[in-house]
Image: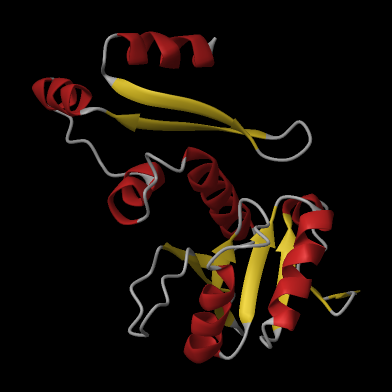
Length: 183
């Protein structure tokens, strides 16, 4: 019922709605107001607030890369459910380093890259090197264990130490995987 209402709102050009699969049967619904929707809210005396998808549209091509935005917002939600502090697309002063997420668990913090897919021929290796310069290791999250392992191999071949997690594992609350062990 709620989903039908969201689509009804989008049919009046009041909001953008996208339902994205995450892993298994898990899905996330992305919702953000259009300019018309914001104007309508203000006419009702409600000042719209920016949500996570709005932030990603402004800072991280969230409108063009909806699957990546969905993965990132789902990861952020899981981190917050663990009681951790998060910042979407934090601004970092390190050339070539544009992290997706910053997570602070109190006794540790790190910049995290959410990878939507493994790309054998891409600029990912430059990203890993920039991550190495910025924080000394790569921290990667992927949807599945299989692709997580490919990304770990990619980091290793680029000479970048790192840790990785996948949403299949995070949903089971096993958290970070490094060198085949769970922390």
